[in-house]
Length: 391
Image 1 (cartoon, one colour):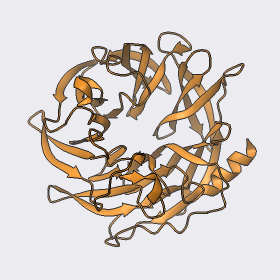
Image 2 (cartoon, helix red, strand yellow; image 1 turned 30 degrees about the vertical axis):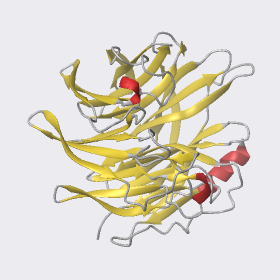
Image 3 (cartoon, rainbow, N blue to C red; image 1 turned 90 degrees about the horizontal axis):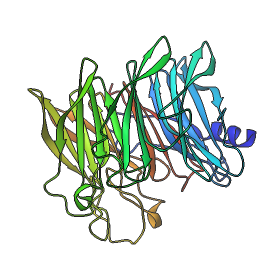
Image 4 (cartoon, rainbow, N blue to C red; image 1 turned 120 degrees about the vertical axis):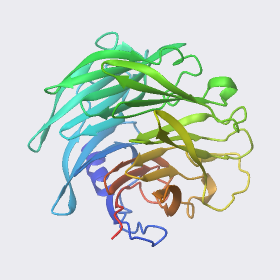
């Protein structure tokens, strides 16, 4: 495990995003990480970044925390699963991350005879992180699959599939570092249109909770926004894409930040991805379609196998959007992993492609900083941190 930890630390690179320079130079990546070393979930808040590293040989994982000191990102801690499954099972520890201040939530799904899901709460005291709580759903360790995890203020949203056709989003409120269950949301559709960890992505900011449901209506897809009023969560709006065909999976990715909301679709009805990201803005208490974004990259030919598609992964914050790029396996030496958009004068505009060293697996934005991770196709997988500020 220590070899994995050391290799994963070596994978981290810091790339300065130069204004108006097009593609970001990622030559700071360290190529000697040593296969296999994949990045997965990422989270960023201010001067702290958390990333999940996966050893693809044995499936072992570690969550590594980095902090910025005097303008330089440095290692702070490695966090491993304190409650690993017994017997022949293995744990997908760090499959979801949520970070705010000195609180880090880490999602874990155990695989073996049955699937169990957990969310562990870690608190930072000085330079040290320690587990303070394991959040319960229906029991201390619930037979379930995690579908999403988000933290906004003192409220946590946790998406869980509990059986073949049931699920919900649990809302927990934190007080003095201790979280308690307060509400359940989205039981009317979760679990009824698919049963895997990618079926119902969620995003959460302030009083808005957004949940995708890509399998609805013959996989044309949908998404649902819930609004908090006091302690009660109510459905605010349902989203559909009237241009989506069966199999396009609108709602396969979601993001929300303040008065901006993004919903992606794979566009898998044809031979190749035809992804799209619908941007919405809030007006008079309703979400209004603002713009439909398509891939700014050149058209690509038909392929049988795609590693990713435009809009498959999304991150939204501060008037900026990171969206995964179309990524065929046989063009990994030249294809960018993501695209950066900025909101300029009320219009979302493509700013630059991002070379994420492989298909985008995770992205997050905080202020003028962003972090991305990808599969290791070119480098031995790097997690990149960008400064997006325009001088």
